[in-house]
Image (cartoon, rainbow, N blue to C red; front, side, top):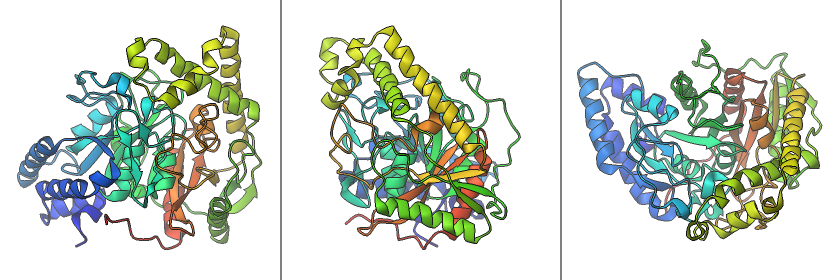
Length: 464
């Protein structure tokens, strides 16, 4: 058998069922893995050492009695800091909230996973307010990429991305409002799904905001989706419950219409190695029988700037409600980013920005409609320097790297990042898989096919 930390959730569950491995052994191995990596990575906000062992012992008792709560009973899990979990504070990545009290209840995604008997190892890190796709936080410090410690994980599910790549657990739960599970996935070499808006109930819900699985494999993410997609009345934006078969098989490529989008022409220029990976993935599908056609950019500079202005206005509204002494604790880059022009916005300015967001939404849906699946880069660049809050370190242009991800948050379309290959210096490169609205299962099927046809993957990183 492989090392315990190398086992997928599917493999752990099977090993538990056969009696070859116990949940306590799995948790002990996970805690040892965290202890080895964490001084280098800083991926965890809180580690529930004793609580996790207690949960594992309870799971072991249930399994010995032949009464597991689910196939996931005893499987280890981390949850992003901003997803409420009973007994844990949720400071949303910022030192301004460092004294926030523990939460009294689990948010819907955490509740569903806890009900299965998953063992919560702890909470993963994120940047201030989750509004930068970076691993830098005024509260948590710098979260580093296991593949190259001097490189960024991206974000905002920064700790989850690093923890998955480092083998802390097979299951990780993140959130995404502009790319926050997919960007860490591409830079950390893992799989992540941004579900359709409302597919996974969340609290509090917000336009574009979703919770989604971050794992080393598509199969493990599908296992999570079977649980996460269960209803919860607290999400007033949730989709109606659908009878989706989450036992995913690879897509049949023959006759599928694939759109290939390699240049958004907005934001940062796509690096050649990133573009080559996406083109290679499309060619592999074409060779397998799919019809691949070029999809030209549907995003305009006005739409992208409107999205930025909308995010700035939203965050500035939160920032100005803080007392002055708390404002001083917010990461200076974030404070400047949300203030530099939003402090002067009129109501008309905000509504014009919102109008551009709606235009982006309409354009994304229309552009993808002729295709069964669209392939694109996730990020236009490779992982950048770990200490930077943004690739160009400019608070007046903080989000030039999300042009390929943010449209699908606003259009409510499912989108995933599948690792395809590696750069010349060994950095992972993911391919984005975008489906039509609400076709989460189709995105997972295509992602599973890409796992099958992609080049041989490198061994996961190990601590020095």
